[in-house]
Image 1: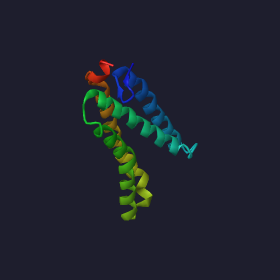
Image 2: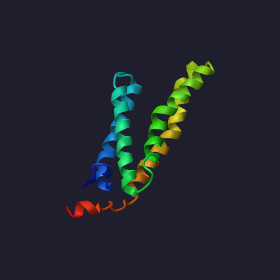
Image 3: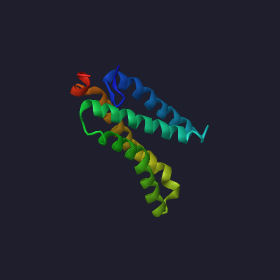
Image 4: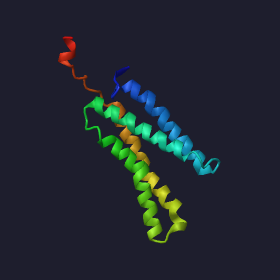
Length: 135
C-alpha cells in the first residue's frame, strides 16, 4: 500500500482521509452543541493530519506538494481568524457565529472538492534510484 513514507497511493489516501475528515465533522458537531469545548485541540490535530495526508497524496500525483495543505490549513485554520478579526474590527461581535457559518458554507465545499480530486487522480510511478539498484 505504501509507496514510500512520503507518498500515498489512492487506496491508502482514502483509508486515512475518510476517518480524519469524519472525525473533524463529528468533533465540529460536538463543539457546536456545546457538549465539550475542550476538543478543539484534537480537531486541530485532525486538520494537521489531514493536511499531511493531502501533501503525501499530492507528492504521489506529481503536483506541487505545498498547494493542497496550504489551501486546507488556510481555509480551515487561517481564514476563520481573519473573519473573526474583521467582525471584531467592525464591532459585530454578536454576529460572529453567523459570519463563521457563512464562511463555512464556502470553505467546506472547497475543501471537500480538494480532497475528492486528490483522491481521484491517478498517481505517477515512483522515481527509481539507480544507485540503490546496483548495491
